[in-house]
Image 1: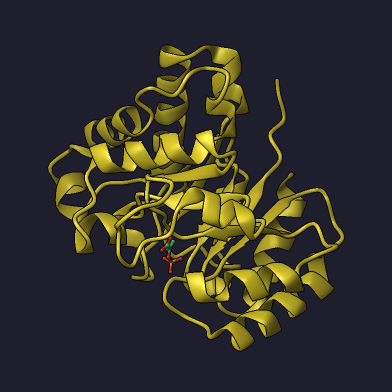
Image 2: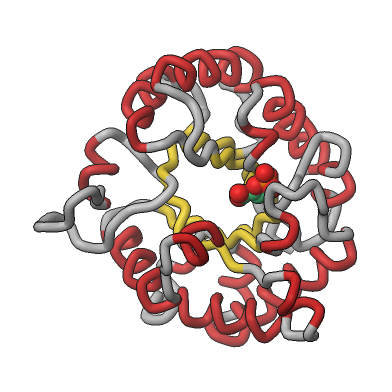
Length: 256
Ligand code: PEP
């Protein structure tokens, strides 16, 4: 069986000034910036990307953005493109986060354009999928996740899908303190891996990292990270403090 390197990514959302971000990155780098057992990514807001990137230089911690536009340049006021992110050494980009989908109207079609643009520019997309509480209660979880995954990956070929990271984030668990049970999470992760095997190959499906996101904390992480198909976490709230984020990285190292 292929062993996938676990990945812990911090989504800072609209938090931290550039100076606050540098201070946080310095603490993270001091604690886990040399280890190579687990891949660690921090995703500051756009204004803090460059300075955070400078602060993590020489460490193993990588830089991610929280969104981007699918065009390379042009009249798109307020937007940032993949080449702009690459120019400041960003390696990852979160796409299709539920907050982008619900608050900013992002559709599967738009998210797919972004995924393709990210791959074209050698950025690793962290494609977020997940059901709302109403969808879970209606028994539609797997259908929703299937649609978002398939549409999000449309046009991605089997040679590049290994660069994609998928984050399963049940919307009802994001920022709410409610966590999916390990069984609920593992079921969906295994389902996504099965979908990848069906659409690509089993070998490809075994390579793709599938993260869990939704109120992951040091207390619940070890059990989630021990699941066969859970390859790490996309962390919101607990990524804003070095101590809890580092504890999550440590839990991932222990679970590797
Ligand atoms: C997120 O927004 O991606 C997330 C998982 O947030 P939280 O950890 O705060 O639930």
